Every structure is written in C-alpha cells, then in structure tokens.
Picture 1 (cartoon, rainbow, N blue to C red):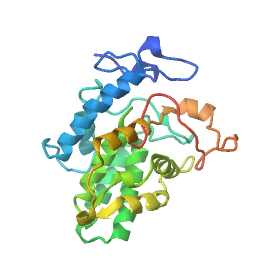
Picture 2: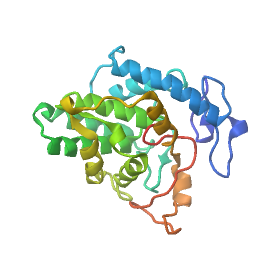
Picture 3: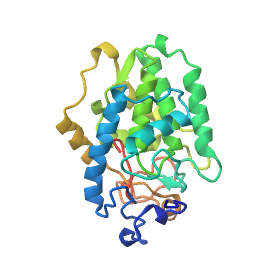
Picture 4: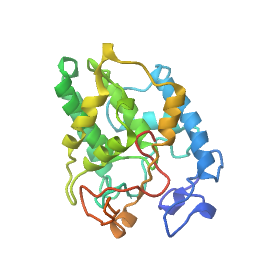
Length: 273
C-alpha cells in the first residue's frame, strides 16, 4: 500500500514536475497519461454516481463526515487507492487562505458544523428563498472542508442532493455554467486568517440551480454531461505554492485573500470533478 503523506507522494514520480507541482495522480489503472486517466476516471465515476442516484447503494444519510466519506469511497473506488480517505496535504484553489488545514483538524470541524446545520433545520417547510440561503450555507462549509485530494466537487454535489431530498426542491446543476460556479465557490471561502466562509457569494448560483421538485427538467443527456465535465476541470495546488505565488487576476496583477481569481494548477477538481 502506498503512503500518501506529502504533496509529491500523490503523483507518479516520473510524471511529477517540481517546478509546477503538477503530474499524474497515482491511480488503480496504473495510467501515467493525465488525459487518458481523466477519460477512464470519468467513465468509472459516472457509473458509480448513477448507482448512488438510483438508490442501489446503501449510504446512511447522516449528513456528516462519514456520509461524505461514504459517497467519495463509492464514487472513486475504481480509481484511487485513497477513495473515501481525507487528504493528508493542504491545498488551495485561487486564494492563499486555502481550504481546511489538515494540521489543525479543520476538516472535521467544518463537517461537524455541517451536521449541526442540516440537523437543526426543518427543510420540508422551506420556501425557495430560505432553501437557497441554507443550502448555500451548507455547501460553503462542505466546500471549505474540501476533505479529499481529488473528487470534492462530485462527492459534494451528491451530498447536497441528499440534503435537497429533505426539502421540496432539487438541484439542476446544469443551469449554471462552470466559470460562474467556480467563481462563486472561490469567493465563498473565508478571508485570510478567518474561519467562517461567505455563503452569500453562493446565493445567486444556488437560487438558479434550486428548482421545485415537480418542475425539474430531468438530467442532461450523456453527451452534454460529458462535455460539461471535460470543460470543467480546474486544478488545485499545494497551499504552500499558493502562498508563494498568488494567482493573477484579469488585469495581470495579483491579489491576496478573497477576490484573488485565476486558473488553478495541478491535477484536481472543479465544479464537475
């Protein structure tokens, strides 16, 4: 069994570029080509997601860390040895603050907060406005926890679908384009040195994707789903690299804290990953 305890250890050594912090993640296919890996991963994880959505998998809906781990474990069981296991390294996507630190127990803290939020709300009695606000809040905490090295987007979306099942609403993720979703997700992160995320940055996108259950238009075609997945990949990088090299904004300058936005680096996940 491989030990994953450093940023580099997640990659095949012969594919890893120390200058960029990028490479091909170790995988159960033994695939060294990142593009080919993406195609294989997509095919396997799509089927596993369908199994969950069809109710063919017994995943206790406890709305906590165990729930999220079980989702991730099932989705990625064919792809990564560490499916369902917390990441062991800090990562960042667009902001030097980074996601929950593995050194301080922040991942579990955020997910305990998530459980408290979900359990303390009467979801069945919500109108669209209140559902939008509360689901955005839950997702902001789940997203900031970002517990896995890869696949947070897919496991988080299924987690939120389970939350929505408690309410009169469901999510149609395709109503929001990838760039808009990723921008809102990035802006929802905490300020530098702060703990609490900014769920208000997600209100607009959640208001768009949340629809009354009877009005749902059904899933996208397989072709559209695949196209959206292939165009949605963004790349997390190590928190240390993010702190050393803040991402440039549209004008070419860099910014620290909330509002820093640019393409992420490394092999990782975005809205559909």
